[in-house]
Image (cartoon, rainbow, N blue to C red; front, side):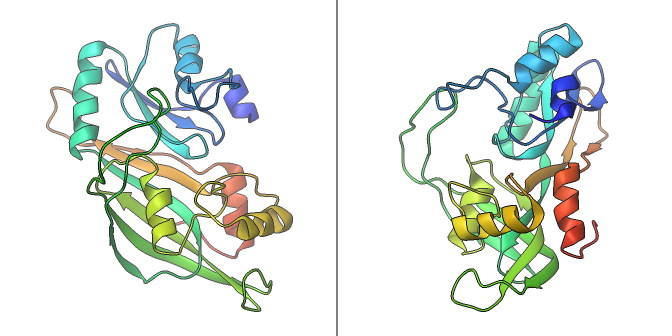
Length: 243
């Protein structure tokens, strides 16, 4: 757990209905039957930090960092949750992936349900899932990982147009550009290379922006989340500049 998480979650935005924090990588949003050994959760930490009950209205995977929204009352929670469920909230992510994807495009690939942190295994058939992708920078490292003498990586901006569980990680793996640091859907050899070269111990995926509509307002609220220092360090060492 990072020092920032131990001291309290960084608050990016707060009003009477909503609070958005910058969740560190490695922190669960809430108690999970999958990670039974974990004792710290974003819901609990923020509740203790604010001295009041909070209601998560969407989720980030344990390894994903960035903007995470909570409502401050039940009515607001229902409204914000509906916005996320219907795709009314825009979410932007940055990720480092293996290989060089096409400069821009969309991944349209249905996804089967996977185990839920709160409810366990899920049933049902594949559901529609769409993600847009834009390449921001590329790099080629003089290290043999697969069958080639060098290894290629890209910094990409991702926007999920649907909200399936593990959607970004599964979609990038589906198109053979898995996210670096992903121990479930990624490539262990590339993950090890980043640990050895850059000391990176995390999933290199972060939610960097939320765009949503507050209750009783016609104006859109844009909330940006700065990258964690460890993520920024990898980007800089690859010779890239943040957008």
